[in-house]
Image 1 (cartoon, rainbow over the protein chains, first blue to last red):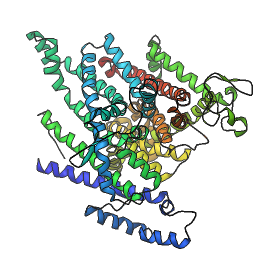
Image 2: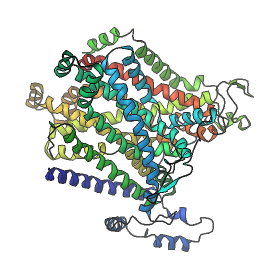
Image 3: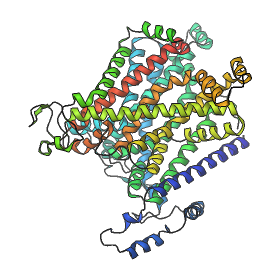
Length: 323
Length: 293
């Protein structure tokens, strides 16, 4: 077990290292951040020169990367060019917003999707099954930014039920700002969470349906029926545990994806989360923040994948992990 | 194989969802090709755009005689024409990038299986690296590195998508390599590239072909998303996605038509591709037929 965990960890570490080189080279080739920092109209060539030296941008590329890695290993991602705050704590300050959004979306998507899939798969080819199947294709076809905009149009502009953007009042809890403790916060959370949840409901429902169809045809389910168990009991006590592996996988991966994919939804709803920070920083060429955000998102994503892998063994004793 | 395929598709002609998606796709293709002839206005030509008619609601009459059936956008461009021209760009970008990605991915996957050893190791590690990161993240890094422009966005989508094909094709190719026609091809001393491209590739393609509609839908959505984030196609040549994006700032003041109609066009396009793809997969894969997937 220990070697497996260590093997996974070293793979993940290598992945992150390669990732950081690509991202660093990428952000390096985009443009010169100095022009976003000095005032172009009034700056003299000397000012630009001084700013470049102050940011360490006059050094060769490989040396900049070396310095960056050296600082990262001591937990320092540098200081944001724009906000003049440590880049990593800036990312951390945006984390609660993204986290509560992703958790709320998953809390909507996982039960809804699983239930839809279970009931659709139980009567394969029935009316409910066909409706779920068709609806899921539609739900997966909606581009997320358009879905968000239509939710704003419907829920905020035409009906006026929910505010269109922003996070509203937040309460401080464990030194971080949360909006799940106020009713205003919940009203603002509803639309973006729905926008993130809808495609996931469809995805989870399709997986659960496919799993249910496969499991329901097996002997042990027939045995349960012969024993006279109620259909509900068979569905929830015998079928559900047997289809849980793919569902847990997709929940884990989608949750990691949400922390990254929330980019679009956060931008539209002006939700001050990690995704919005990433897009803003890319546009402002704020290199330390871009690197800190990318590293953080990758760590979470890779970490979640590894966690899901290990979780298999808990869910299904037949799974033997190999490196 | 081809007649069998056609027969299966013919047998399913009564399924309205599949048919409807086919008709929609055909309409889209015809409309995209003939856009310059049927669009009431050339939205890329500043001389044809009346700035004072900006943000007219659907149905308002235009100064030049016709009616803006779906309204105009914030710059005074006719929405119907913008959809028609945007469709051209969306389809061009997605079809080109999907085909390039499929070709590169299949070739690399098959080569990895054929050569084995370090070639296999290098290609598959890169595939693993890519598939373990979220698509949008890879696309963002790629587009940020490459810069804006239509050719760059195609390249970014290729970078995102090739790995899926490579992994699938490698698996199939591994089982094909042991077959006798491959021994025959090698015994005939055919050059390596010929064995790979003319013998191994066509025989390992079948499962990957069913991926193409899915990836095409993804490509359209990805192009639209990147354009929406302002990292995609240039502003003066809007795709469907960037037209929707341009309408966002007007949405909050109630000018819903700028985003609504191009969005419906985009949504219908992706939905028809997905339905058509699902239908084709359902019919061509006997295993999924028995499972009803």
